Image (cartoon, rainbow, N blue to C red):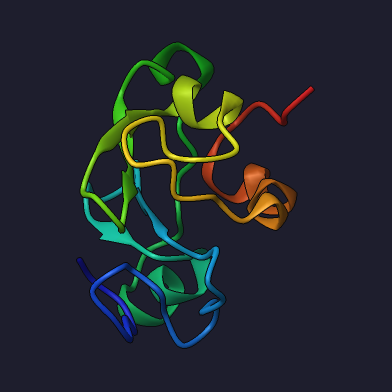
Length: 104
């Protein structure tokens, strides 16, 4: 895990509510970050979004239980399918920073 992480459940200095418990593997570098701001602050390259044809990649980490979700699973989830930890619904507002196709 990279970035300004503040606890073992992947919260960071930018997003640290009880619901901020996911990290996303960035398509550009293959590293997991809690958020786009953490990525921007840590690297010297622009973020690349996952393409629609890559939505079966396990690129979303539940910080509570460590389960890796596919992008497609995460897109449909309100909580972790393994441990039921709720996900922050506000994260979907930033969908376009991580994934090429906006939620529809």
